Length: 314
Length: 293
Image 1 (cartoon, rainbow over the protein chains, first blue to last red):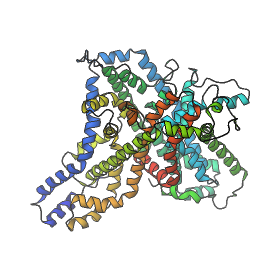
Image 2 (cartoon, rainbow over the protein chains, first blue to last red; image 1 turned 45 degrees about the vertical axis):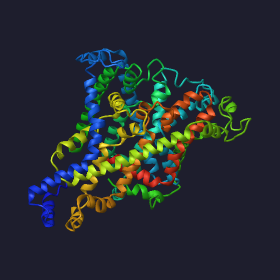
Image 3 (cartoon, rainbow over the protein chains, first blue to last red; image 1 turned 30 degrees about the horizontal axis):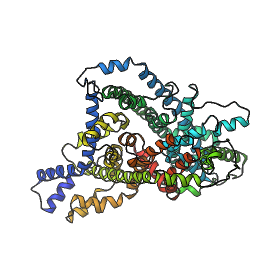
Image 4 (tube, rainbow over the protein chains, first blue to last red; image 1 turned 180 degrees about the vertical axis):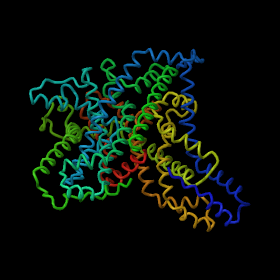
């Protein structure tokens, strides 16, 4: 990482201005100025991130509830309870399952879409618009659209299936199908972001590489696998990382489409944190699950960091 | 990473020496058209439903010529009876405030980290980088209790403040400022301008594209955010559009035409803005997306 600290120049400037008694004074001035510039952000950062993070950690060791009863420290009781809580494990399992089911198509399909759009076929703005527009919608709008698409009696999907003589599917009510439906909605909603990153990366591959490959007699498919995909490796690593972290945090669309149902088959870990805290009013317990989940996110981040660094080193 | 080509490359068609009407290109075009049509279906289906009468919308599935015909009745009802205009206003106020505060504080902090060698700089920077991986979703319980203590539940500030800073944006802006030659500032400083003045009149004008990119990214996130405004507002008059719509869904129940009209109305502002500023928005998202690495 490059830094552009300009201490020598700064001192020179201070001296040139004649308003300092040397390097020590300049250094002190810089500390004052530096903190003044960083202060507005730092105040918000401390108040609304550092403090709640520490307060949450404290809460996770208490039996704090809405009524305030039993609000004292109870050691690791919340953590041991969480580790034996089948609902916690179920929600965690659902979250990991959702992450797997959503990340694979969200990476592969976004790449396919970007490759197709990048062919330079006519109507380029229209393709880009179609794939990207859903990303601009609020989760609530997405859910209103898709709850209507999935409606068992009146929804478009079952209507089209009926035209082909296929029996209606209970998209959101069947525990075996609900997660797939949630993944399909998520795919439609968020693919635009990955698509855009891939498209931007594709356009940065130098044209000469293709010309050289074409002279060597490499066909389009050869070029795809020998030039394009390897060139996109850093972008793919970034997209996979961002996607896994985004999928692990899934809440909105599941909460509003299925409310975690049927029978808890789609409830995500963030929803379980929300419910423990705001429906069950068990603030301490909810915080403990937050921290367990945070530990998983840290592990995933470290694993990805190592994987990416090893790949770029070799 | 540069994304200029993405914004400019709109007119680019086939490569020279390539037959623009080859069979493989036609097949690719068909696949693309099919995929794009599929992606547009939920919009079209929602628009179609919103133009029907409630009776028709709730009567049959695919009916392109409903008995009652098409009208804007559902939109009229939603706009006159519902709270949608008020929610849109709340969304606008809070999103603009969040965007303004985030951009201003991130730019100032980013500049400090890029240019000023102040005491404590290293550990503060490390803390901010580390904070990027903390998902805000995990802080909802302690944050909500804090807002209760500050008496900020059911206020605009309660919605705004916890969203009004973004560690990743500080990082992105710091990296951008690092690339601006220091000499440009030195000239102004020798002339006697102080740091704030240099920042305002030399650095900010050079940073307009990146500031726009950050602002676009933050605004879209704030406009669409659901979980935090949902937790911190119970008063229907203060709800943002995404949170308010959630109550519509349950309140209107089986009024499909009005549900879809509400959804379309809520989607409209950003879609219209996108149609006008497509290039800037795409560039902004791509720049900040890559910047987060």
